[in-house]
Amino acid sequence: MNSTRRGLLIILSSPSGAGKTTLARKLMDWDETLSFSVSATTRKPRPGEEDGVHYHFVSEAAFKKMVADGAMLEHAHVFGNFYGSPMAPVKEAIDAGRDVLFDVDWQGAEQIKHSALRDHVLSVFVLPPSITELRRRLVSRGQDAADVIQKRMQKSWDEISHWHGYDYVLVNDDLDVTFEKLKTIVIAERLRQAQQPGLFDFIRGLQSEFEDLE
Image 1 (tube, rainbow, N blue to C red):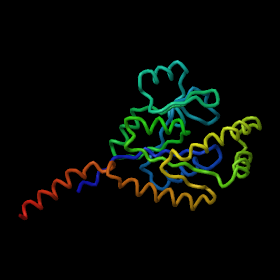
Image 2 (cartoon, helix red, strand yellow):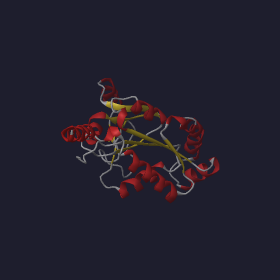
Image 3 (cartoon, rainbow, N blue to C red):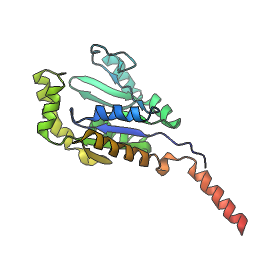
Image 4 (cartoon, one colour):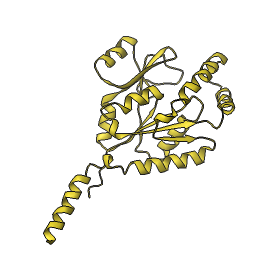
């Protein structure tokens, strides 16, 4: 049988601080064929960020035109800025058998799961072990001011309340253990029928062999 497979659209979602970004990086270190979906955004670049690497930084007018043209797989308005995933590079990747990672919220996940590429979606929600630990992680990473942390905490329950819309849910109380579970999920999902385009021809070949025996 031809081993060529279709790629997966791997969605990782969680409230800020639960560990999805770290898990995504570990997943990419584990399998270097994985690529991260580079989102388009209207927010300004942060120090050290490069256009086309971390994000595609675009104007609000350009972003809205992409949405109107149907060129976005998903899009959302978060903390005063627009974010979205361009469709074309994602389709090209999965058709070539390459998995693509998405770090999106539940709204983005819902849009992807109802898109033309829905048959190739694997969605995983990452939960923190507790709300106290979630806040500790946000404070300890030192990236946001106190008012931003408070906004993220307020938004966290809204994110968590949509856990049931995902294929898998992982509680990230131990990063290494959680990562092993995530790897197991990805390995299994790559074997889904929808990910193996050569199955139909393979079964027809078996049928032909069987008929030749009669």
